Length: 249
Image (cartoon, rainbow, N blue to C red; front, top):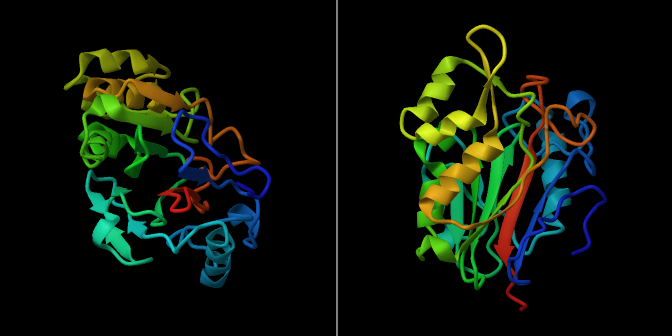
């Protein structure tokens, strides 16, 4: 896959017909804190520049993606019946149709790619702490329609554990239902913790029955030149995580 330098292609054991990538800040026309490849229409950026950025990404896709109105929930949009493009209110999307593109936008939240081991169905999820605690990954895994043991997952760029400071209510949201989640939190200042989104996602996926989980190790907050971060700058751009099934294979 020929992509602009710096964009991330997941290193995971998915079949060759499963295509996916995550954009970075490189390759667009936006300026300032939105520079340069901001894909978020609700970020405060010039709409004309966002539209130009989306056109630049579209050149690397087999069809126009279905953009989601993300609400930090657990709904999964089934794109099989959808036409090209369009929008849906959801925080994950899944499809079995070759050439149909699923996407989520992030700027500290965790994008997670999922696929059936034979490449027959794919999904992507937007997992901020609220969606993660509520079960968005479990919903996305279920949307693939197979035993979880047949599902592969890859964790994309999100805020790292040293930078993600949260209050006790966030820790309680996870630990109250899954005590083992306590290991993903470390005390920082008084009544504050750091949270490891990657560890929390791996725990949720493992509990759901997903054994093959790759990726992780990024930090959108500290890798300033590479990623957007809402925690770092509120007027931030958005990265795009795109996945589809290649119809030519």
